[in-house]
Image (cartoon, rainbow, N blue to C red; front, side):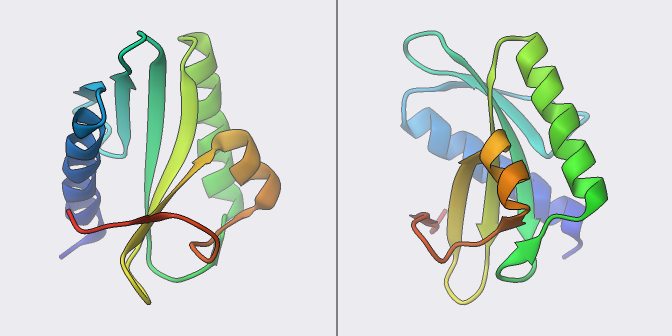
Length: 119
């Protein structure tokens, strides 16, 4: 399975997860790695999805540029922007992190916390 189709399936899984937690979801069709949603109180969220091939991994400069771009787009629409990374190894787990924290850390790792992922 190639990375883009895997990311597309993860976007659907994440949308299902959010709907199960009271969000109304809108997935941007031209950008399979971006999902937007509104929670029950009407707050807007922008979810930037990543498929992690290794654990942990450093964000490359191009990744950080993309995250900053997504943060700016989220800020322009008054959305809270988060990175959502799915790790396959050693156990399937998803981490959710505010973009500012991800940029500061420069790496993503499921070693502390995360959501066990079985979707």
